[in-house]
Every structure is written in structure tokens, then in C-alpha cells.
Image (cartoon, rainbow, N blue to C red; front, side, top):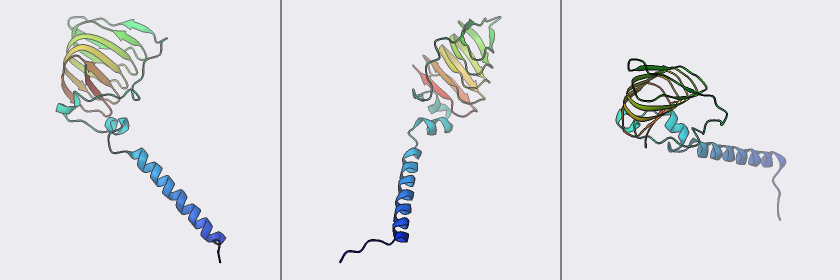
Length: 158
């Protein structure tokens, strides 16, 4: 003789299976710390942070119609404050980035200070970089001395 579960038991089984499915999905999303989200929220040590790799799903290419502009270096100092722009600056001893959401191309820089957020900064070489804000990527041909007080910052050596 076969019996079928009564409606309350069936409801309990379906609810239990749904909970297990949701927990499984959440566990899969939380990962083991190897995804871009966990790297973006982990403050790297100074020695490891200068070689952290930024994932392509975190930073994308700027829009083709982004306004392009140039910054100038006066007496060895420059301030880049052009938000939402593609900014180019050659060699300059000291550069401060106060802009937000900018794409910045630099030459050789001795000291880079970033106080703006969500910038993609590329330089030939950087001696030292200090970041006080969040969501920036600094790419250079060398491994600079890094002081990172923000969150979600990446320091990439080409």
C-alpha cells in the first residue's frame, strides 16, 4: 500500500527544500575570499598590496565619449581635480588626485596622493602612493611604496 504525504507534510518538505536551495545559493555567492568583492573589501598589507591584481569585472573600460583633458605640472606639483574625465599629465614630481570617477594617465611620479574616489590611475613609475579614499586602481611599471587607508583599492604592477 502506497501513501502520499498529507498536505502539511508536503508543505514542510517544499519549504525545507527551498531553504536548502537558498542557503546553497548564498553560500556559493559568499565564496572563499578569491572573488573581486572580497578582495575589494580586504585591506591588503603594504607589501602585498602593490602587486594585487584588479579583476576586469571590477574596473571596465571608460566610455568612448568621455571628455579628454590635460593637466599641467607647475614647479613639480600638480592637482588633478577634473572629475568624470580622461586626464593626461606627463612627468611630475608630486601629484594629488582629488577628482572622482576619472581615468588618469601619468608619466613618472615621485609622490602620488589620492584623495578622490573611484579613479583608474595609470603611471609610468611611482615612487610612493598614499590613498585615503576608496575604489581606486593605481597601475605602474614599478612597485611603489604604498600607504592605503581606504577600502577597495588595487595596486597593479605591469
